[in-house]
Image (cartoon, rainbow, N blue to C red; front, side, top):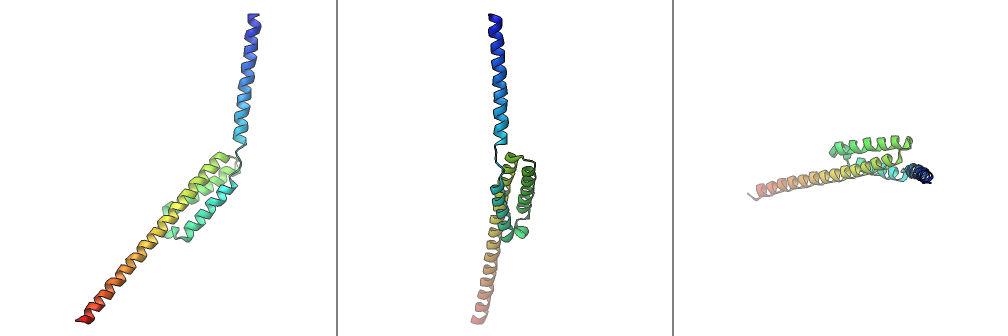
Amino acid sequence: MNNHHSRSTQIMRSIGVTAAAAVLVAGCASIPAPTEQIAVSKAAVDSATSAGGNEFAPVQLQSALEKLNAAERAMAKEENLKARQLAEQAQVDAQLAAATARAAKAQKAASELREGNRVLHQEIDRKAQ
């Protein structure tokens, strides 16, 4: 009887391990392709490019492009979790590039305004004499 109980326990463990493995595999396979996230990331890259990312934030923009390309390659291989993570990282890098570019443009415009004001004050001072 003891031998029978041991054999039953062994079979149950085997079934449990098999079921757990099946759930794990099914869980990995059920991650949907991140097509929407990749589209959002592409839009963020386009926005960063339009904001002047090539000129003012080339490192961040290049990083976003590389991660977006890697995400597309991962999705083609059906590595959906990796693809989603890379696409999300690409989006963040692109947003950083856009923000950096906008800040640099604003700083450049402010410097130009200060220089314009300085020249105007010089001209006013010159005419006042």
